Length: 140
Image 1 (cartoon, helix red, strand yellow):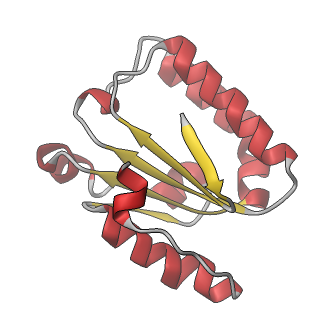
Image 2 (spheres, rainbow, N blue to C red; image 1 turned 90 degrees about the horizontal axis):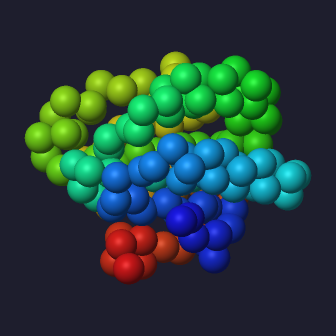
Image 3 (cartoon, one colour; image 1 turned 90 degrees about the vertical axis):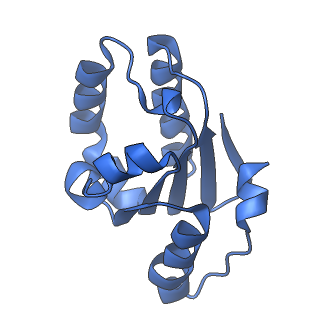
């Protein structure tokens, strides 16, 4: 589940393997964030190898959702850094192009600190917004 207590920063730390139901529930949460009618950033942290597995059917569901919601993503999402903590998985996924995949500014990072620095410099700072969150706060 994502933490909205730092809005306009949404923080999602994923540790468990997702089910198709959990995947669909996350799509519903996205709709709620869009309904706020405010720009936001999503910091995604994949903390374990299991959190990176995709349930059967999720690729098709994700593709359909993305096609339907790309305009909303581009309108409301101001940044989406993705942190891949397992070193072996980071090495495999570090070239993932968030902007190409989702149509929003983003990047793939090996640590939460790197992602926070990027958010402060490239997303919040350029908009004159303040962001005060630490890696320890993200991971609790």
